[in-house]
Image (cartoon, rainbow over all chains, first blue to last red; front, side):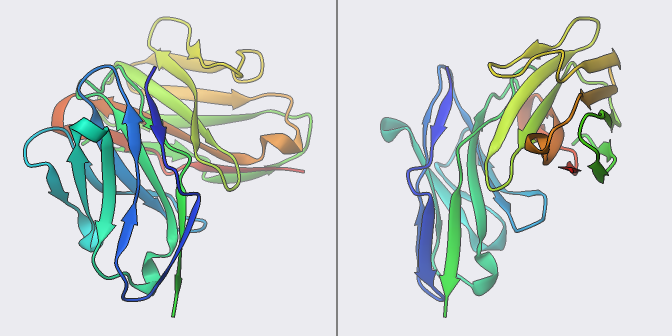
Length: 115
Length: 114
């Protein structure tokens, strides 16, 4: 069965520092990978997604993620974090034939940003 | 990408009552997915709703508690029955589209049971 592991429950970084959020997946077919962000009291916002092509994918808000098939990972990065990036981040895996397959979410990583 | 209209956006309900959440999609889709997000938690799949057949429930979720209706290819409802404070959560519907369309989520229903 497909699953997503986000090993870090909570990460604190200083504003302006770099960020990497880890995500490992288990999926029986070619995965369709996603990162979402959720600010307190807000809905999910899609940051980026990857299915094929260049393994480094760019998203919104200056985020990028790198797909590494050999490591079953899809880590999210940002070179310089802003205070407004403080939120909950979810990695998810689905199917390119996504009409019939639901997204499976990791447990999330809460990002705190300090001055 | 599909657009989903989900209502209500929030509600406060008395324990023991039921609430029905509706999701309307602007295009025909085969499957609709219902999720629950408990406070401070991730999204957990409740069930998959296929038009014309009974919904498929995930472990830990039962039809008597979360009955689902899927009368056509653009609409679905989820009812939270006999509510208790533990049912206080955000409930979301979602659809998937083959290819680059990815997945679309409704805006969510924030339920508080008192």
